[in-house]
Length: 309
Image (cartoon, rainbow, N blue to C red; front, side, top):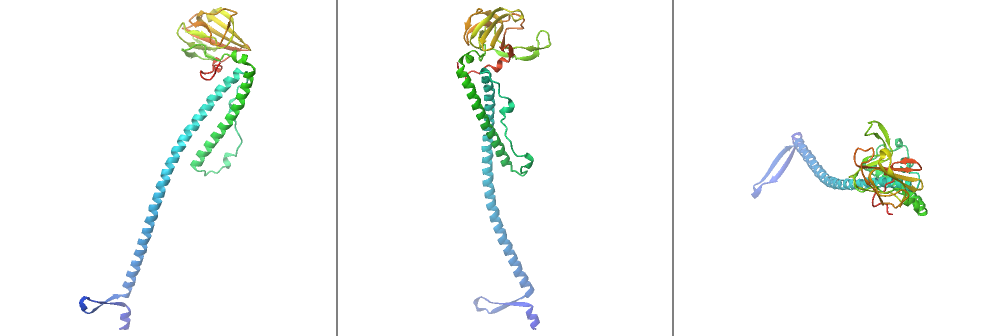
């Protein structure tokens, strides 16, 4: 009898209204199993509650990080655009500076020198697990560092130019630096091109500006007229000796407004655009020579608003 009782748990409870005491027998194994199951369910429920709280907190953190990342990406994009714009301006300054160096009879800065490169670690030795943002910032750092070095190079170069131009004002005044006419457009560049008459490749010693016949033609610098006449296939031509090795020529004019031996100033009208000589239509042929060597005239023309007489 005792062995049977050990296999059960007996629970007594008092019924309402003093209706007596009632007993309930539950197998010991079932009671233990039920209790264990309840403990397991409680533990699992508690763990799920804690996990849910953690997930909710992580979700808020992730959302905050996502928002912060979007803001950072937006700022990086704007910064990248500003750096690109600054690089473009530096390249424009590089071109203008080389034109200024030509005015001062200085050698232009080469592309290699302009890159102002510096040494650094072998790329293969760098950490291959660099984050994307680190790569972006590293690129920005290199770009800005190069721009700073280029600005220092420009400063030294401009100082060299200014020193020379301040000492030699005549050099500035006698260098052909303005466009020889207002209006019209560039129709043929300096260098090798297809000859419009022969159809063969030939060297074009100047540049051509297409413009209406009668458009005023200006001297691009101070100087003295050394030619003012019809000049074979070049038609009506004006040649100006500016001194310091510079000479300019203006051809295919419809009318000449100056005389040989006359002294002129930069911007002074010397003739009118025409179609004289060997020409396919009204235009101005403009040449620049320095020490008897033909140069690209466009390399000497300073854009309006940059050069002041």
